[in-house]
Image (cartoon, rainbow, N blue to C red; front, top):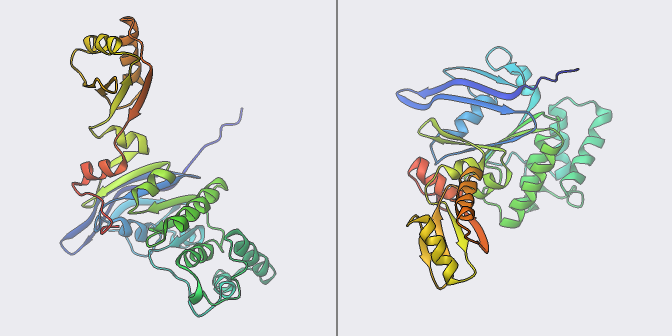
Length: 318
């Protein structure tokens, strides 16, 4: 039998960074698996961009054991750079070149074989739905088109790992969702994505795992559902067929609820986990209480963000 070993695409242990007396990152530990989307959340100034800059070799860490794509960040940064792509908060597109010229410029910087440059550029233009605008100056592109071109430029060198630092900031909802699908397609092809974002819906939609950074420390990590279950306010809404059954259910639960006789519902606090739900339903079933309908209500990532960082996520911060 062949045993396949899996390695972390990105690994960090004890990552630290300070500027003078200001500690920006205070002992960050990360392990991000290949072919997944990892999202780093946090308020402005939490250190998200600093993490991206360090892991993409733009700046050095003060301390920590760091590896990207299997290469040690301190001893083999050139190998790391050859394996990654970075799309920052601000577009790297040259507005006075057209889309094709921007991509060819990146192909030159990557030293791609001349026979491969044109096919690679043509494929990316088609993949990102930029074919019709390929010969138009990028200055005429919409925000969404320019962001797609920016990401296409990142992919010219076929990186295995992509850092996306707030890639959809400023885009309208339709353009944002287009970018989401592009990111999903990349991961389906085996690319690992490290995503920072201020849009909590974006992390909820895309990320396999999410970490929350606050004042230079990771304060939580897990799937979106795991993080939501950590925040109080979740409940199970039980709907009954008649008032008599509602009363019977209320007696069984002994006051652990809020009731609405008009709607024939009981709202029972709970974290929505399979175990807690099974315990609740078994308790009702043993007492011959029939539930007509059931729905789970869990806190969203806005509640998680507020609970963990003490700051609401506002449109101003986004």
